[in-house]
Image 1 (cartoon, rainbow, N blue to C red):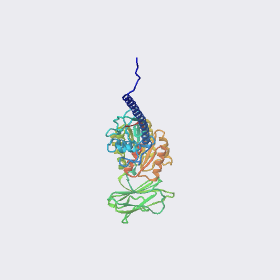
Image 2: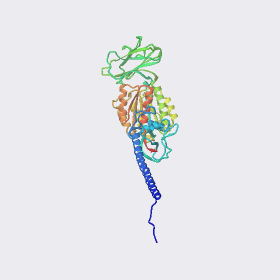
Image 3: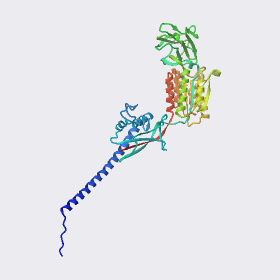
Image 4: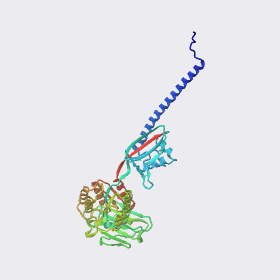
Length: 481
């Protein structure tokens, strides 16, 4: 029997080569896909980390960036603390189709998409706009990815606040709060001499209005200062040395003399456009008498302060959703005017508080020390919230307890029962400012100076938002393609 040798035809060889080549090609393609996925996954991880670091560690540029001027996106106000306005700007950039790609470019995403989401640790979404219930979610979150990376970082959100405050608000209602509040000219400090000195000049360029001139001294127990003014046409107003206690300082001018202050009030009929010259001196005072002099126009201080206080109460009511409580104090004008008067104990009733503010009139003395003590005792007994603070708004210095340490001693007493004592000087002189600075320093807070209603409102807002807690949030960033 004959056997045939095995043979491979040319066709078989070609088929074998084709199959082998196909296998090699498929293997190469599969390898490239695997390598690509590994590389893109690594790239996504790196980019996600870089974006998180950039957002939380940088304030961005410019520092107050917005959608129209942003050159570098960052969210921090302090390291690890996010700024509410910047986060809202980022969310708006990411959710606007016209600016989404701009945001991607500024974040260095390359071909990747991004989804940003901020929640509380329990998963509850963070609301960044209470009026529209807008949540902190932005970007392309319809994720259909071949490669993606997600990173979650813990941060503090600057305006996510815990409203848990018992606030004692003390409003100066002494007689000087009947003076005007909008400062046009002011000379702080200096020592009076026995001769008239032109301390400053002021020009009234507005339309005719009531106006006043005030001089306050560092000796609130004496009446030894004098202030005179000369109008642009040369009319002189004031009291002569021979009649230092006059009340009629000229046609349309009324003079009032206080312990530590002299006051000239003018009706609009005496208004003149041009430069008014202000002169000051001391009278029969043997020692050093320092002073502050100022020119002012309406509104009356107490009216401006009441308006700012009402707006502040509304701010707390709206921002805290009626969670924070307020106690309201004024200086008591009865019985010599050297006691405090509580108008409202701690309450969340907005209407009651505003109604009580409306009843305040300006008269009496300035019992700062006694009021601080009374308010501290009240806070200890009645405050129900986690955080306790006082806010004192005053236009003068202590006029009841004349001990040089009375106010600081009262602040040292009060700080044992509240966490903070913040102070605002409203159209204040140097002596009063020094006292209020001391109270704020002892009270572990800050002193604010306000010379008109707008500045007072701004100071109160800064005090309130500076006292709020910040809360932990989770910022999740997903980059994908």
